[in-house]
Length: 437
Image 1 (cartoon, helix red, strand yellow):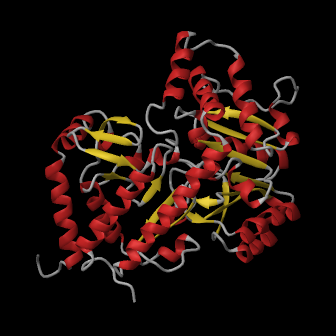
Image 2 (image 1 turned 60 degrees about the vertical axis):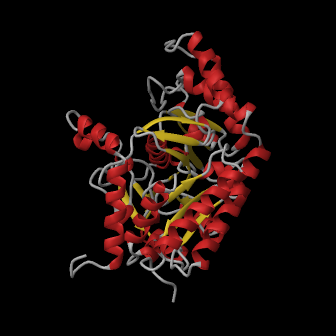
C-alpha cells in the first residue's frame, strides 16, 4: 500500500484483483465484443470496471457466469425478472405463441386479454397503449400530457430515472430528450409548490416515481405524493406515476397502497412476463385521443407493440402465477430481508444501510435517513464497491450500485444464504468500512 492509499483503497484493490483472477472468460468475452460494440457494451447499466460478468445461463433464482461460478440472482433483471429464470408457465406460453407464428402483421386476441388483466390491477388505467419498454412508455405519456393540456413544461425530480433518455441523476443528461423540464427535489413538497406557483400555467405534467428506483430505492413519502396530486389538480397539470419499478410492490402498485389515483401511469418490466414491454394509460379523456377512428387521433405506431411473445408471456404470468397473495408474500419477504440486512450492518457497527420498499432495496454507504439523493452526497462509493465484490465472491449477484430485486423463486433458504453472505463480507471488511458514530 503506497502512502496515498487508505486501508479501504487497499482492500478494494485486492477485491478487484481477486475478481479479475476469478473471471478470465468474462474479461475475454468483453474484449471480443469491443471489436464491434463501444466498450463491448450495448446496455450502459450493465457495465462496471474492471469488466462486467458475462452470464451463460439461469434457472430459477440462480445464474452461472462464463467461468462457471454459480450465484443467487439477487438482481432479478433490474426488477423485470420477477418470475425468475425460465418459469414453466411463461415458457409454455411462449412456446404456444411461437407455434402460431411470431409476426402476424395484425391485431390478435392477445393484446386485449393482457390489457384487461393490467386494467384489473390498475383501474386508474381506464384506457392504455402498449410499447416496448418503460422508456417508450414514459416518452409517450409525456407526449400525451402535452397534447392534452397544450402546455410545454414537465416537472421532474433530481435523481429520477424514467428511461435512457429521461434520466436526472445529477440534474440531467446530454442524452435526454429536449422537453422543457423543471427540476425539483424529491420528497420536498414545499419546493414543488414554489415551482408550481412560478410555472403552473405552463406545466403539462408532474412525472414522478412513487419510489426512486435507479436513484437508490428512496420511497416517496405519502404526504409528498399526495401533495403532488393536489398541486397537479390546482394548476391543471397531469400527474404521471412512473410505476415501471414500483408496480410490483402490490397487486395494484404503489398507487393502490397509497390510495392516490394518478392521471396517467407508466409501467413495463415484469408485466410482459420477462419479454420487452412497456405500457402507458390512464384517464379516458386523455387516452381516447389515441383512438385511430378519430379524425384528430394521435398517432402511435410500433412494430412490436403487440408482439405475440410478450402478449402471451405477460398474460400467462399475470393470470396463472402472480396472484395478489403471491405479490403480497414476495413483498413481505423483501421487508423481512431488508430488516435482516440492516441488522447485520448495525451489529457490525458499519455506517451502511439498505433502503427500499417490499421486494426492492438498495445499499447505501450511510445509515442516516435518506429522503432524496441529495442526502447521499459525500458518502463513500468505495464502501459499496467493496461489499459488491465481496458478495460476488460469496456467490451473490446484485447491481454494483447496490440494487437488489427479489424474484419469486427466492425462498427462505436463499434469504438465509443472502444474509449469511453479507455477514461474512462485512465481518471480513469491518475494519475498513465506514464506522457508525
